[in-house]
Each structure stands twice: as structure tokens, then as C-alpha cells.
Image (cartoon, rainbow, N blue to C red):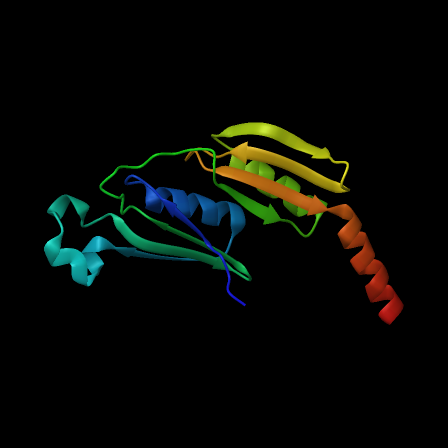
Length: 149
């Protein structure tokens, strides 16, 4: 099955953003600069330290980023969000607090009609995040685990 991964474009602060996301989410961060790539000879000297490609991985999470802004420029909008389905109430609270630091806690965590703890925020890099912890799903998984043992 094909998988969709989030790919974020930054205007020169990809290293800072991806390092911030790693401090919030954990995982392994790999960054390649323009200067470390075969493109180095074709690019202006001022771009040598820009991130050509970065990847943050942790279990099934893959978040990618780059400083390679298209010629049309970089436009931040509200049409794309990054959604994290958390495994516990502790995890969602920890991630919400970490990701909203320096940003805007748009919708604080609250219980929802669909049985989840949910909230959204805009981080300090103007990226929008949705955090969801489905309490009912987790409870049903525990019951099934108990019944199978």
C-alpha cells in the first residue's frame, strides 16, 4: 500500500524547524545540505548551508523538510495540517505542550463528541498541527487484548 508523508518547505530555517520537531517528537533526524550534495557546484554560495533534504523518522512517523523554495516563492496557508494520532492521554498532552511552545494554541485539548481528546495548534514555524487521542479505540484495544490472553 502506498504511504503519504508530510513534506514541509522552509525559507532558510529548515534545520531549526526539524531540530525543534525532533525535540518534541523524538526520533532520528537526518539532514543533507546543498553543500553536501552533487548540486553544490550549480548553486549560489549563499545556499551551501541550506537544507536540501531532511527526514525525521520514529516508528511509523516520517516528516520531511527542505529549504528549497520554488521560484514562485513560499506561501504559508491553512489548507494543509499535520495530524498525529496519539497512543495515550499522556502522549497527546506532552506533544501539545511541546509543539505549541512559541506558537499559538488555537484549540486547547478537549474531549469531543467522537470519544477523543483533540486539539489543534500552529507552531512557531506557522505549521498547523491536529492532535487526536481516540479514548474509545484505546479502551477497545485493551479489552480485546485482555480477552485474547
